[in-house]
Amino acid sequence: MQAVFSSGCVVLIASFVGFGVLAHALNMPLDYAVFLSAFVWALPSQVVFITSIDNGASWAMAAFAVSLSAVRILPMMVTLMPNVRHEKVPRFWLYIACHFVAVTAWVEGMARTPKQPKATGLSFFLGLGIGFLVVSVLGCIAGFYAAPFLPDAAGAALLFLTPLFFALSILRSVFTWGEGAVLMSSFAIVPFFHELNAGTDLLWTALIVGTALFLVQRKWGRAHG
Picture 1 (cartoon, rainbow, N blue to C red):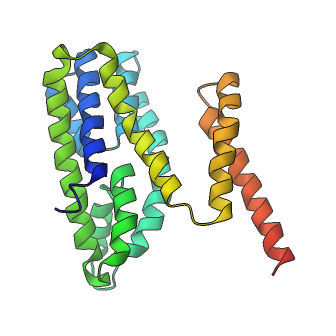
Picture 2: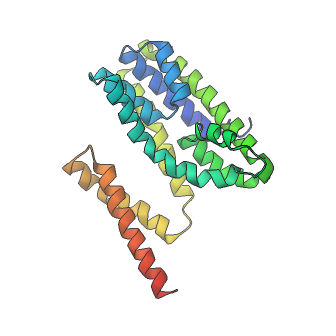
């Protein structure tokens, strides 16, 4: 619980307040917003879902869009699982833990689970994830009821806190020249792709910068191998 109430928790609550404001603005019932916050629990995916429905997409297409947006969670899950996996823990509990892998839980989990005994790493992360999920739902409810009293831009500003927190957390954890090169190159070229096509700017940035770094590191490794 002490780990839950961190700087990431403050950002998480504020972001889900923004989601509650957005849900209210789009006339989504509170129980729908709470359900999404608890069972999707990835803010970008939730925003994709409710805005898709609001724009007239079918439920099936909205679900498909959410699935595509959730692909980004896979590398987070893959990097976190070695910190919480233990031979005495049934695999079922690892599948449960995957539900709680989202930006804030991943950042805090990667920082804290290596410091836990291997046998208790999964229990620690589950407690962390459940705590984050509970405060997220409470933030969503608070935002929904506060929406009539907030400016229109407040919800969007609060939603932006999560990606900002993620970017700053990544910067804080950079340890190699390769990681630094990826971040700086991405920041430099993403505005160019945004001007070309705002819908695929992050995709092209990640593809080009990631591929270039992979090739450079591969050549560097052979030259110094």
